[in-house]
Amino acid sequence: MQVTHVPTRVPTARDPAFQGYLLLRVGFVVAPILAGLDKFFDFTVDWSRYLAPWVNDLVPGSADDFMIVVGVIEIAAGIAVLISPKWGSLIVAAWLAGIVVNLLTFDPPRFYDIALRDFGLMLGALTLNRLATSFGATTIVEETRHLKTAA
Image (tube, rainbow, N blue to C red; front, side, top):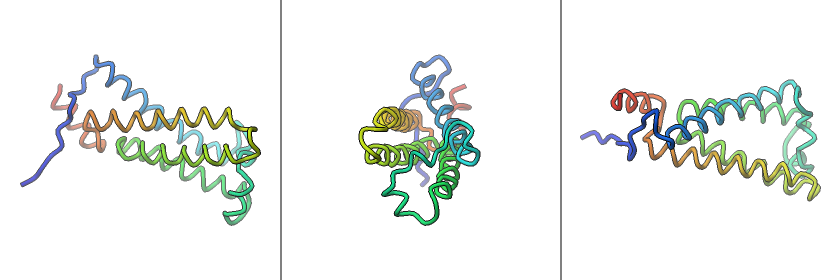
């Protein structure tokens, strides 16, 4: 006997909660991928200057080397949200929690403003998880199936 997950809410384009879900989903696909790509080019900022010295001491190589790894992880997290918003959003939230800890422990209170922003983003990622759960969007395949059923 196969058990399938039925969403607790049927998604419709006019549903404000579904609209919010879509906005968060697009944001948490695009933003991590763009931020990850920027780690390779430092187009917007020199990312290594945000790495706490104690973190730099833990990882092999230089801060610049570590930021390349961070970029790959961020791109992967954005793709994870695209493929499975329910689980990808948790990866993004955990990653943002790590960034918040890094910023709070780096020369306090120097980056508290950025830590607060990233805390807000973490709450947004957790909200995306709850909405994805409510709409039964475990994977892009399941989400497409539910949307076809609702149409």
